[in-house]
Image (cartoon, rainbow, N blue to C red; front, top):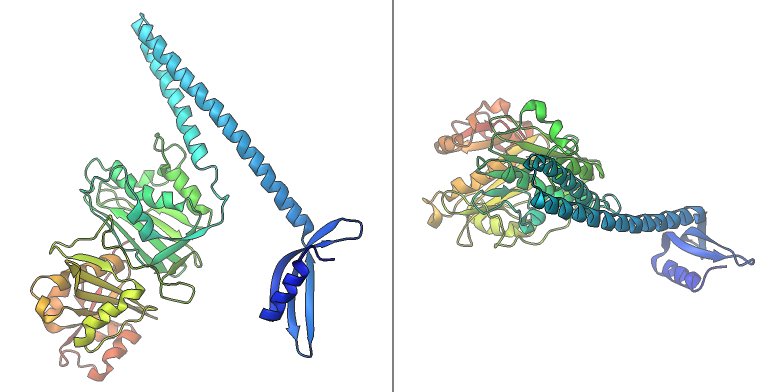
Length: 448
C-alpha cells in the first residue's frame, strides 16, 4: 500500500494534469518492509488510466549510503585539516623562534628552507580545502557578465580596462566556475609585469559549440610552456591556479587552452560544448536577463568618451526607436547582436551584427542627425567589431563610407564573394552595386 498521503496526492495531481511522470513514491508491505518506486500515469479515454511502476529501492539506498559516507569523509577531512593547520603554525613558530635565537649564522639557510617547505604544505592545504566540493553540487546556469561585473580582482586598481562583451551569454557549469572566470583576468593582471594595458573577453559560436575567449596585450606565453602552465603547482603560489581551472571546466565537458602568440599577448580559450551555453533571447530555453546596471564595475569606454555595450534582448526597443528614421528597421533577438553607444546615459548610436545561415552581416549603423559629428558611430562599430570580430563579417557599405569601415579592417570585395543570403538582400540592384551606390565589403576574423 502507498505510504501516508502519497496516494491521494498522486491521484489528485493526475486528475489535474492528466499525466504524471516519474514521481517517487514509497510502498509499504504487510511485513512492514517498504520499497521505493518511480510511478508514472496517464489518463486514457473511457475513464481509464495506465500506470507504470519502476523499483528504485536499491538505487535510492545506495545514494543515501554514498551521501552519508561523503558527509563522514568531509567531517574527517575537516578534523584532519584543522590538526594540520595547527601543526603548520607550530612548526613556523618554532622555526621563527629558533632562527631568532640562533648564533650560528650558517644555519639560517636551513631554517629558511624549512620555512619555505612548511608554507608549501599550508598552500596545499588551502587548495584542498577550497576545492574539495568540486563536482559535489549540480551545475548551474550563470551569467558570465554578471560574475565578472561583481568580481573584485585583487590586482585590479582600475588602470587596466577590462572590456567584457558577454552580456547575453550564460554557461552551464559547476558553481566553482565563477572562480575560473575571475582567475583568468586576474592572472593577466598579476603576471604582466605592468605590460598589460587591456583585457578583452568575447565569445563566438563554432560548429561544435562556443568559444569563450580571454585575451590581453601583454608579453604572451612561449609556445613550449602552453601545456606546462596547466600542470599542478606550475605557478608555485597559493591560489586557484590554471591547474584547478582546468579541473573545474572539465567537470561539465568544457576544455581550456592557451592560444595566444608570444610577444602579442596571452589568450585563453574555454570551449563550451553544445547544450552547455545559451544566449538570452535566441530561443525559449534562453530567457531574458536583467538589463545591465549602468554602474557596472568594468564599463567599456571609447576614445570619444562614449560608453559602449551590447543591448540586452529587453532593450531592442531602444534601438528600434532610434531606427525609426532609418528605414524603420526592426531587431530580432534570435539572430541579432546590437551594440550601442551612450553619452551621459543617452543612446546616441547603434550598430548591428546579424547572423544568417551562411555568414554574419554588419548593418543598421545609425546615429541621429543631432548626434552626428562626435564619433559615436565610430564607437558603436568599434564595439561590434571587437565583440564579433572572431567571425568573418560582411556588409554592404555606401561608397562614401567605405574608407570609414576600412579603418576597422573591412576591404572591398566582388559581389560574388558575398554569402548567398546576404547577397540576396540587394538582388534588386541586379549586379550593379556601384550604380546603386553600394560597395560589398568583408572583414577577416580576429583569432580567438
